[in-house]
Image 1 (cartoon, rainbow, N blue to C red):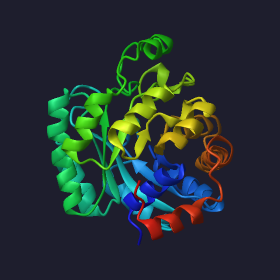
Image 2 (spheres, rainbow, N blue to C red):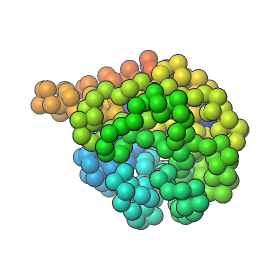
Image 3 (cartoon, helix red, strand yellow):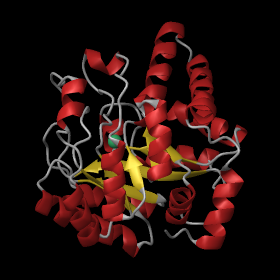
Image 4 (cartoon, rainbow, N blue to C red):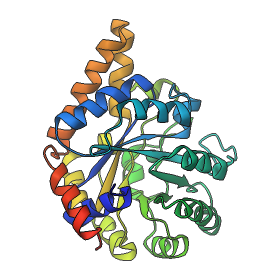
Length: 310
Ligand SMILES: [Zn+2]
């Protein structure tokens, strides 16, 4: 079986992208996997710690069980999203234990998020997580810079944030971070934001984010690893498609399908109707937003022959 790192590197080499769909409610997984298969594309299914603490993903094991039930490794793999070293409520997390649990369960890739720490602490924490993952032969994603949005409380105005470049991943720091941690993929902040997960904002439509594409190119030159874009469901499509050509090889999609699921379930009271809506939204994201329907064979054939190296 091709490993997930080869597949992401193949996307990186070819200017393609692998979407990673978050599953805050377990019934969302089936329609997402179905949409991926029906469109002959490839995706990651992912769960973040906050999705079993603040939503209804129910934990690493429950997500793995549902994944096994639906599993088609030619189409999807399972990724552990955000395991924060310090979480969105400023609590310390036993992050190495969570990552080890995912590795023991057979997750195909993991992420450590030390982005709330200062640079030296983030490097030290990330290095430990990378070591742990690599011992099992599993790739590890890390984050540098501040992809805001998960925190409670008032949000800064998006335009102010973008214009100031506050929280953007620093170029020099990124070069050092990747070199010293050995992380396989780097989640960057270049104007992208997470969807809110608490309060009234949780149900509001996200603002359309823009990306500083010149900054992204500089990050790629400095790191030369596949870059990851979190908060991918509300980025200007034009910017996103250019960012994929530059080096975004994985794009996380959460809010867009979560809100569809929640609102249809609330209005209809029927899980089946909510699943149908998630299916349709995922098809739209694959076909219209990302334009990656029918790319699976090209991606996997390349991954198989090259091992993906750029
Ligand atoms: Zn994220």
